[in-house]
Length: 632
Image (cartoon, rainbow, N blue to C red; front, side, top):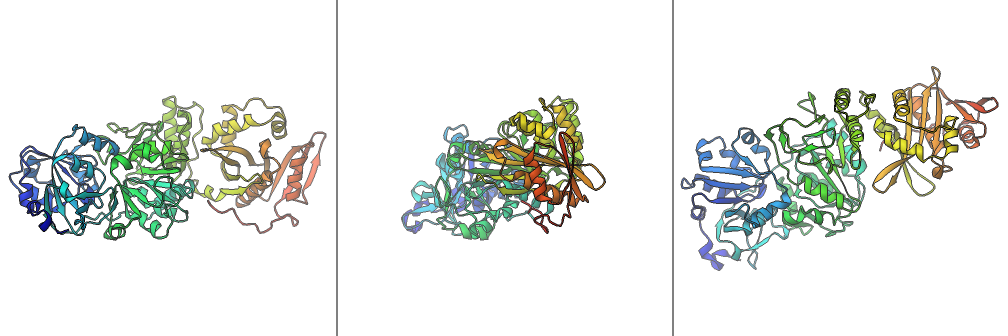
């Protein structure tokens, strides 16, 4: 459609259109990379603009004027999210921040809680039917446009055309300004480093094939996307599309085939990135753009089965409270989409959320996991909403956990140099037992090499990994699930109580080298439960004593034999030459496991016990040359 022929009265210069903005007006500006730069600059140059309130979600162009005192006397900025280019101005008190959930902003416009007089938007040229596209900025732009008294649209041939609820007819636009210019680009800033690699590795462990993912604002959630490149049939339902998704889309890792809501399509509100990304999105029916009131609605999000939300944070306290929008009293970003997606993922069948963050800030000088949030820091996400937290030191599962368990889980993934201090602070706050041992102060990344999986005879898959202090409650539950006979075979007496004190003694002996404990876990709905444990402890200079216990419903599945093999690999890594085991004479099953693995094992016995001496270099041992288990 040629608008000069269809509606010539609407086609005006930018100066003429901007002149419709009256003194004291409340002006909405389209979001982020979709903002109408030409209209913004024309408005700023118009000296008749006085006492204007500007509302925007993500702002780029306006950052150019914030060192101009005359501009600040004429315009007041109200931002729903503080972009990177606006942080300095936020710290200096030059802008005003409106904390709210993205899903609720359209309602604020519609209800007139935030009244709008004018909307400045950018659209693609109209098609033959008169429909323009809001392109890469549908989010809150549609609501801003629909609830403003006057809509001024910059028609830009370089604005990508997007599918979904992005179309607006020229009849619904009051003024049209024809102006071609490059769309704002926000190229990726992330680069691979060791911290990102390790966080990405842990994220890849919990994201399963066929999941639908959401990726939040910020560099880290996007920087870890390359580590999902081995997954299959991922889907996307997210607020913002960035360059981080491009490789996964091109490799068809993201196929959207398994999505339960709008299968086959990426659902999003906003696109921010490079021109390469915009070219990929342009007129591509794979992408389905909707407003934030839809995309970020937790009840809509929950209609995606297996929805995994991936976002970041600035700091998290030991109880699970998350700050993501401020550094102390200084506003840094915004609440954005985090809470919407955390709550939506919690309601999703099979869904959950991940908050990923480096363990430290300021070049390692401060911990991001803290006893309590910094003074002035806002609680963007409550402790009840947090599920999984990941740093470069591991995975902490918080949902359904007590304060004691949360302290142990989070301390375990804090930077090693801060762990003892965190435990001591937790004791002062009466979060944990006074005798609680801190997690190891070593970097235990090498333990990733001791993780492995095994397909069991009942069709389930078991994960085997080292035992950690945060496993205390799971270990306790495991003990009390055992029958009296099983406990007697393991401990040689009818042990009745498996107390915190008993567990502390066991953890105190585990150093992951000379002394090691491996646990076997199986999935039970959303969480995992322990079904077996195998341990060795130094007995002589080159010999370790080994012991096992397997839950009754998993006995006879080769688990003890598997644990014995894995413990042997670890023991050999730590310079042991063989195992010693003591078992009851009537425990024929355990005796069989040892003799099968070490046919030339020597034994001594008395009236009740058998002591077995096993050499790793037993010439008749099966599986000679066995390699280490593959890192998960």
